[in-house]
Image (cartoon, rainbow, N blue to C red; front, top):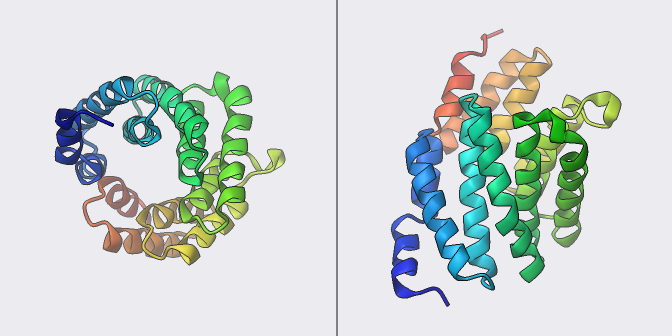
Length: 223
């Protein structure tokens, strides 16, 4: 069990604080929360949820770092998050833990393309395991879609396949702002700007504070 002070720290800077920092692209806040969660995980090595919280925080930090094109921070954060994510699935092989692990593997790749060969397969395998464990987990399809977004069509990915994954995630959870964000990005890659804007607008309706969705909407032509 986590000590009382660590539990208090978690609830004081829990998922809502983490998501608020992610939405605002607040790197200092994300770094602080990730550090706190990492320290808590170190003190609770057999607590799968503590390990997962640390992994999620690093994944959010890597996500924002990629958004603002800070590849060094993204690689460091994703690389650091992999260890507690692997620990979480080893302790308790839940689908949502595999999604986080797969996401972290995938976040290393755009930050360091030389890692693509090794981490690409690990990412794919982790997400597939999540889907096998829970075929109705929206975040698993969303994560697979992000992988297919970055994977060239000649290697089995591509925007068409990614769009199918994002639509599946939305079907399973219509309130997934992130799925609408990535759907919009994929549609824009296909020059379907009007549809992309609709997806971004829906994502903003669901998460009005998400800076990156607003940025993508602003840079997408009406036609």
